[in-house]
Image (tube, rainbow, N blue to C red; front, side, top):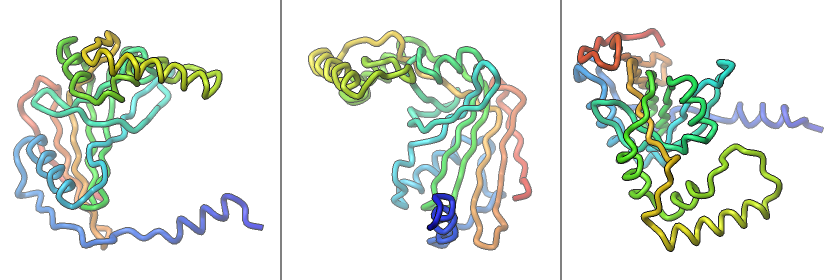
Length: 224
């Protein structure tokens, strides 16, 4: 009888990359800073039908410098950096408070592309955080009101009761403030663009700058 590991091995061997022809990426024809290229690649991922292109992996470290990662949604990007949001008392919020640095990973297989972002993290203003929450759905507000993220849960019934109460509040008070809700800005010092190639000659272009305050970016190709 096959073990779970055997079944997984069979499934893994059946996966095939490059379901479509990857686009050509010429690093010589790129802007001097990463944000315009990120926006262009994001738009192309949307046009290509990439499911949920706004989702990303957010990596942080805990108090023991052990890595942690989870999938979140992008809340925007501008000259300051890339924005994500969560409650400050969540696990990731506590980790960002203790060690304010993070890495983001975007994967868009519809275009055979990845983007990696790294840098220090700063909380946005309370006004921006409130505006972000109010721009979200009723369900997002209900989840923010429920809180207790990553805390031990006694039963699914307990979750159902707390969630139902939060939904009632969110519907009755759509402008309800959640003081713990925080937008975090990843002020990138490194942004890497990865374009896949069927011949494994993947193109990697990395932008770097010495600090988030520096207006000058350098560009460099990396071996795949």
